[in-house]
Image 1 (cartoon, helix red, strand yellow):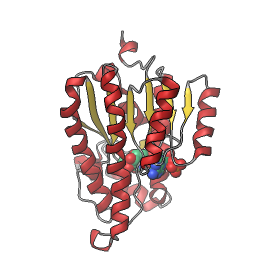
Image 2 (spheres, helix red, strand yellow):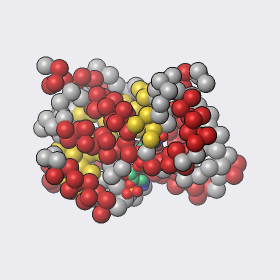
Image 3 (cartoon, rainbow, N blue to C red):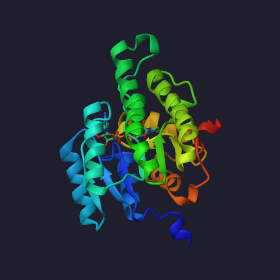
Length: 257
Ligand SMILES: NC(=O)c1ccc[n+]([C@@H]2O[C@H](COP(=O)([O-])OP(=O)(O)OC[C@H]3O[C@@H](n4cnc5c(N)ncnc54)[C@H](OP(=O)(O)O)[C@@H]3O)[C@@H](O)[C@H]2O)c1
């Protein structure tokens, strides 16, 4: 019973940005929970490498590259997934970028647009492609990966923080619009998590110590910590949870300092 609550057996899960970090950990965990997973990122070679690794581990995986900011790529990825598996039960909108370290007044307009197109608009448009077929198949679950930056004002990452705040509300909005079709839409909001995205922080001992000191649990998050919550929200264990933002940050936002 406990096992079946968290099982994704016979489900098809499409995870964006799944060749590294949180996306990869989520993909592996979902495949271990029985899902047929679709691996995607901008780089075909990276997708194929991860697929081969997972298949070698006895898991079911397909590689379909997709730049989340490209309408053509999104359309092709959904079409190829439906061709291969006939359905999408779980959509994890994880791919995102944070390319600038600058206050808002020094952030170029085209950088603003690129971050919004990738982190927010790309996720909305991919959801729009997937939700109608999910509804036609009796329901499903969408999990978006946001950030604790969505709840805090962050020096030098303003455009990223604003894009993630909008992602939190996108999920609430879609949860209301698709709830009667048995589709749940939730957000996981990670704190500082040890992945490539924070390699600059991890390589500076002072910054690293300060980030660890901010947490109640006195350690950084690992990709697997976040993946476990994404699996929970995608599974039947979370069947009455929708429109929520679940923070996975080891107590970083509690303000312990
Ligand atoms: N790490 C943290 O501390 C932290 C904290 C809060 C929130 N988050 C959020 O967690 C999510 C995952 O971050 P991460 O730390 O796991 O990042 P990561 O290790 O840098 O991995 C990012 C993944 O996304 C892919 N990707 C990047 N741009 C893409 C695009 N335009 N289209 C499709 N795929 C793309 C990358 O592969 P390619 O390069 O091959 O495209 C890679 O697979 C993001 O939404 C991030 O904002 C992370």
